[in-house]
Length: 206
Image (cartoon, rainbow, N blue to C red; front, top):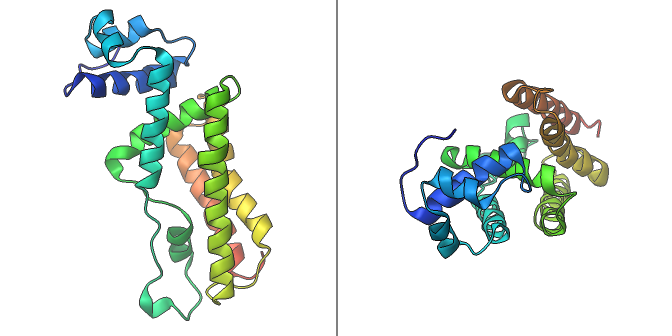
């Protein structure tokens, strides 16, 4: 099902666990399957992770680490007293992740959105580490940019909610029915809508 992995055993275990759980679900993935996909005996797997729950906790830590590695770009010096362009505003509001981490990020995100209603720990992680921090960042950034005259006055709460929930809604929709949205078309449609909202902000219609 999966190509052979290289690298240390713990990394292989986490890689195949992310693959399996993102496709099958947490409850449907067994430790025996994870061991086989990682090319290990079941006993060796338990030497690294006492339980599947411990694997899930490590996957959450990986996701948080990817988020912390994301970068939002600062305002170019020459633009500090001018209205931003749509691209510059997007760069200010949304993190960019290293290309080599993007696939892993998307797989773990799929796990979070598909499992959060069944797992209280994942639900709390999603609320406190993702939703509150991400929404708070966008809200603070919009308020700061408006106060500095880099974007027109706007309803900060409303636009923050729209800009945060739009990507999340696309992700959740694609998680509920993977056949409903092709991933490539999903990204194209989502970014087109985000650009539309950003243009509303810059046109003073927000």
